Image 1 (cartoon, rainbow over the protein chains, first blue to last red):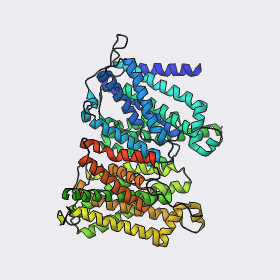
Image 2: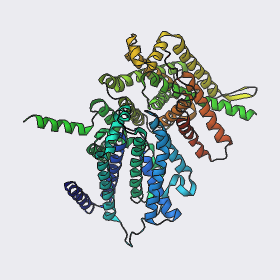
Image 3: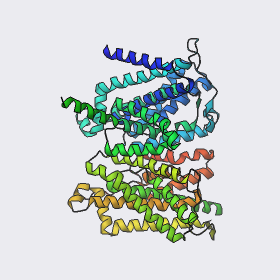
Image 4: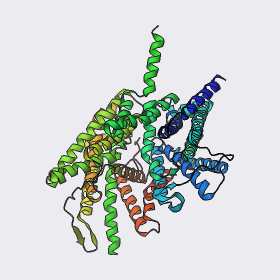
Length: 311
Length: 294
């Protein structure tokens, strides 16, 4: 009950914010919320299930493209398009995961990297279906029950997406499944010995989180009202990884902190160093791996522990 | 026929570049188990080194090349010293060095983008822009240079691993780290050497490929992907595998571009599809690693 009240309050505050922002700020705010959503699900995949995959942002792209293509080229109604889009993401995730999770170590990283690049090639060569290099544009969200969902109300949809993702990941993390994922991450052989089906756990973690990224992508499709290949390139997959590591992998709060920090950093840095914020990201990433492996949230935990021990 | 032979020569030249990048991965992966996604960035650094030494300061090619390769040895050694050794000594999880090197990838790329600007820069070929024709066999000077230099690099790598004590110690570390350390092999030195040699080989690839593609700060990642595709095709365990994988990949790529009835853009997907297929069907690659002999 308390948790539910907490979620309701967060939803209210985050939604209320949406009604106070101008159009530029709304755009920044919406994308921030989407990045946090993605970082949360990627944190489950990378931080909790321990899979180094570069395909998370690709599934975001698949979700977005699937939504637009299914709605406006196939002509499905919205609910069906959502279901079909999720189905497609699950299917593709299974196609990648079933063989790739069999592979040990960095092979998953290689396979997902190839998958991510292949997606971009397909987008660029997709002709009229994917709109090739120019992507797809000039569409808008169909009416829901005869109402147009725009402006701050669409931001509320994104807030609900974020909280829905967070709530389900939180539930998953606290369930036997979350514990199984952590066990598989730390020692697959020991996990196997304890009766955990390692392969099934890996496949499930990959598929669930990838589908979540796909759903976030579907919502994203109507943020800019355009989808094109450069948005879904590898750079953003790297950025997602950096967010989770800098914030503190394996921690929900870490993912949120990392996403907010790295998303907002360019806005602070660009007056100082122009477009070279990627250099700062790289240095940040190396520094965190070297000196603060638990991420920024680890510093916070350290303070808290100190306050508790010193009376 | 002539056309076909020229296609083969071109494919072999690009295959040699992939093979060098694959060798660069292998030199690090084999003894340390670390996959270094930044090897493509090392090639990019060397390409810009080539631009500075050969195009801007107009040094003679051998001098410029020696300086660039020397600098790459230093870069590799420094990378190991700063981003890998502290993690290994702390006993960090195996993933940590890989992530640190991924961060270094971005750092290298952005330093070049800040320092050299985003425009592609020309790098001259070793023997000028000529064409060599020997009966049926024809191709640019640079293609033949690439093939010869790669043959030399692989020849010396093979000699090093098979015939020298230092090379055998690499192999020993690859087969069993703990046992190797107990036999008195200095793991730190092997790791440092592996990174330095890997950077030198990646640098060679960058220097050789840059006359064809120009030095550009974004050239690293495609090379890195093609390199590890070659590595996966050939097998992570053997030096010959890297060469074989590179050549197979390049021939498959060029033949698809030339003969397959698909748009040229889609042909970019060939290495990716090959990579995925090999990971699925034969993750050990064509050549298996040597197992420890009991």
